[in-house]
Length: 113
Length: 113
Image (cartoon, rainbow over all chains, first blue to last red; front, top):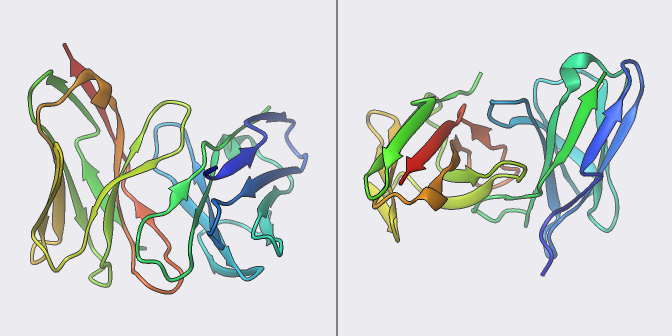
């Protein structure tokens, strides 16, 4: 049973560019959350999707946007990249309403130069 | 701002010793407290979790102690092994609905032979 799958694993972008990261949740999971993890820090919540709608959002600017598809997969888009956006971006999934922990993917390492 | 404070930032323990990581939270609405283990290049993996209706939960060598009145909880790793060397994150969330997980800042554990 595949867990959470993220692509690509690594990415290098230039400041000002736009990037799209992709996530396939674990089988049976329909809620997807995205986190940003800066080097040496804990993951910071970006937003959460359920039924193709953004349900909660963390303290991130509108440059960060997302989408969830009918098959529950999700995308994270970041526009006008800044050097400070360099981080590990983590996708996590769980069944809706289930009161247990999220399953995390291995993340996409984004480097902005 | 919901916060979870974690200490120490780093920890060195000899093989066979006890590793102790402490966390404190502010939001009394939190009712689910997971611990995640993260190895380099990987996403966080759920290790063990506790709810505030119990004061202790043990799974193998890992034990969570929970003090609801003090709003504190801790992870104890008994008989620490070199394979336990990783970064550990405490976290907290409000169960039900759309669970946004708030992470601590992490503790880098090194178990030396």
